[in-house]
Amino acid sequence: MSNSRILSAEEELQLDVWLTIKQINLNNRTRRNLCDVANVAKLFKELDYKLVEAHNYFSHSSLSLKLQNWETFNLLVLRKMGMTLSRQALEDLATGHLGAIKSLLYQLMCAERNGIRLRAGSRTCLTGTGTGIGTGTDVEMPDESIPIHTKVVHSCDPQSFLDAKYEELMRESNQMDNYISSITDRIKHLESVKLIKEDRINCLIENLALLSVRTLTMQILCRNPKWKQKQLQKLQQKLDIRLKKKQLKRQQKKLHKKQLKETMALK
Image (cartoon, rainbow, N blue to C red; front, side, top):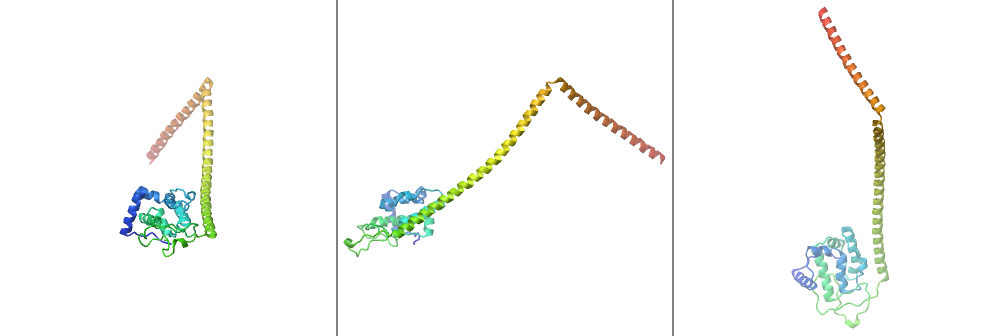
C-alpha cells in the first residue's frame, strides 16, 4: 500500500499541463468535488469504461460515508491497477487534501499516457508511445522487454472477485443496518414526544371544558334576580362580620389600656 507523496517540480509541471488539457482547475470547489469518489470514478471510467462500475458509488456529504466509498474504490479499482492506497491516503482524499488529490491525479495521468495493466483484469495492457513520466509512481507499467505479441490475457481470479463483492455487500449491509437503527431510534423518540403532547392536549381540553361550564353557569346565575339578591346578602354578611371584628378589637385595646392605667395607679 502506498501513501500520498509530494510531487517534484517537474511532476507538478507535467500534471498542470495534463489538467489544462482535461480542463480541470484545482480550486476549492474542484477539491470539494474530487474528495467525493463518485466524481473521481468518472475520470477513471474515461480511462477504461470497463474498469469502473458507477452504480457502486454515490455522492455523500458525511466524511465517514465518503471514506467508505474510497475504501470500496480502493478495493475494486485501484488494487486492480496496482495503485492500492493506505488508510491514511484514503482519509486525506476524503477530506480533500490537495497533496493527496494531486498524487492520485498524477498516477491517473501516468496510467493514461503509459498504459495500465489490471492485476485481476481480463484484458491486455494498453501500450503508450512515450517513455515513463516521472518516477516513484505506483502504476504498473508494461514490461518493455516482453514483445507485444507475447503478452497474454490474464484471467480474472474468481476468489478475489468474490471476496471484493462480499466485502462490498457487507459494507452496504452495515450501512443499511445503521440507517435502519437511526430511523428506529427517531421513531421511538417521536412516539414518546407524541404521547407527551397528547397528554398535555387532553389536560388543556379538560381545563377548557371546566372553564366553559363555569362561565355558562355564571352567565345563567347572573340573569337570575334571586341569585343576585343572595349574593348581595352574603356580601353584606361578610362586611358585617368584618366590622364586628374591628369593633371588638378596639374594645379589647381600650380595656387593656384601662387595666394598665389602674395597675400603674396602684403602684
